Length: 620
Image (tube, rainbow, N blue to C red; front, top):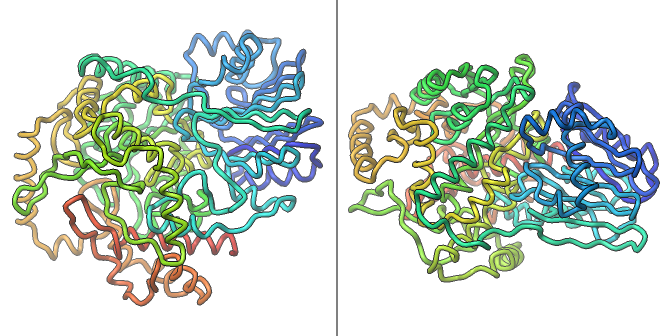
């Protein structure tokens, strides 16, 4: 359970040691305790301390501690090796150098998904910097009450501190069941809040004051002048972001690889492909696994197939919920079960491309599919009215009556400074940005858990990618117009996208022809064959409905739920889920003109089970 735990004020050794224990779940984690007269820090990490461990300047006493990684090019790493005036990890030595020469402004836009802590005893100041997109989770307990304030990358670790007092926030839990996430900065505890993306916090201990400000906001410098310029600059940014995160000194490296558009970029942009493993998860070998292997072979990368067993998602649910804090649905717990494999391979860096869909492909825009008679064509168009929700593409169920007012108020406050009528590119992007940042809240993005179980990095957190994100008009995100060109430029367009069957940068005509061919093929397949094929789909995602009807583990979870938890779920859900036969939750989502309705589907059931398992490990 890698992460940080920081207590401001004079702290007993036993308390910070206990905090380190709460952040430690695996025997291969590194731990360091830092104590100063005015604060104490526990650092627990899967990252090599010689590269990413805490660093200090003995002359000034300034310390730099990061959870997550700041990315550097090889010449920077080599220069850090000569900085013998500092002690500690090389990455934090480089940050020390910049801070000591240029102050906090020199390190505010740090390049990576990292929570950065700087302690300056000369002014008795403690600085906290979150990353541009808020991918790395950071939570605060009563930040304005300086003495006794707690900073941690895990909200549950704060709640388990006997020196703090917290109460459950059931509004956030009801939001999770409705929206797949809570509204930032809320957590499952009323007294604990998220630290916000691209934000600099500063605690001045002599005055006992705390202040915060955003150091970066997108959409401030206009759009790219033309599509070709955008393709060139975003391609260069992506290549460089991946290259500096796949240097030989960071290997061996695993990149979780599907047959889709996004993960292939790591394979074709890596600095040293000989130290990269493309790990593909499947239930049974299928077209997705075949395309993933083709991509690895084309890039000269080692392919590793990982077969999930028939009880994979239910079996790993409780452990995944315990490590994630239940801030995303257990349906997305794809990678925890591969941890033994990663350890056996001696991996020092793990990468995924999970955030790309939301950040660069328009999944968070107000959009809907074109209709052709009764068929939904796989080409999106804009909708022009803001939706107060985090998954605009999916019509959501109504809020439960007991929490409806609070949920609607939170959503109104979160989206309230964005336009209601979406006319311009900026209108759409301002709303989209509310769904993208902070990234650690995004539904279906597993990064928060990944930071806690692997030596993990996020190439999408790169500063240059953030600058590109800030200059891409919404119309170039729709239907992956820009992104398809970028992928084709970096990886070529010979190997198709497993999700849809068309090439990167396919035209609308090509997409429609492939769609029509696919419909004919599906109609020719035996329905009984499809029903009996097990948890596998044609792609990398599982058939969750199969688990609902076949998994004894899942059935036991559902049927053994105590009456108290059943009652609470019924209040948070808005009705009694147990009044619906379990087999009915296996039904696929209902098609809708905007997308699909996920009410009483396996996706909804997995969200409910996520909270049930969370309460079981938390003993609510």
